[in-house]
Image 1: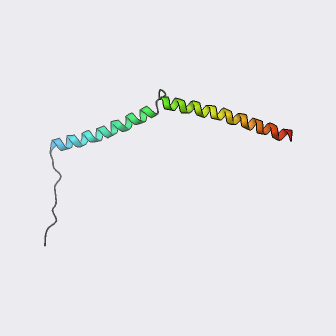
Image 2: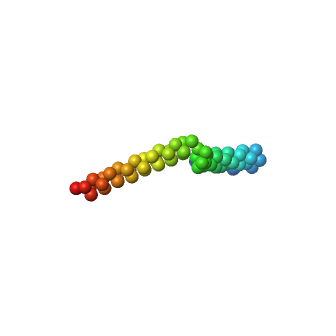
Image 3: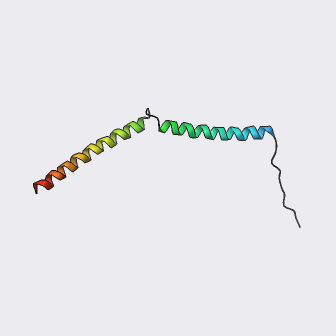
Length: 73
C-alpha cells in the first residue's frame, strides 16, 4: 500500500510575513473601496442623488395632477 503524503506547514518567517502582507493588502483594498463609495465627494453619488431628487419632484407633480383630475370628476 502506498502512504498518503503529509506536509507540515513551513515555519519560515518570510512565508508568515508574506501571508500577513496579503491579509493587510486585502484589508486596505476593502477599506479604501468603502471610503471612496461612501465619500460625499464621489461624483457618481452626487449625480445619482440629483437624478433621484429630480425624479422625486416629477413624480410628486404627476401625483398632484392625478389627484386634481380625480377631484374634477
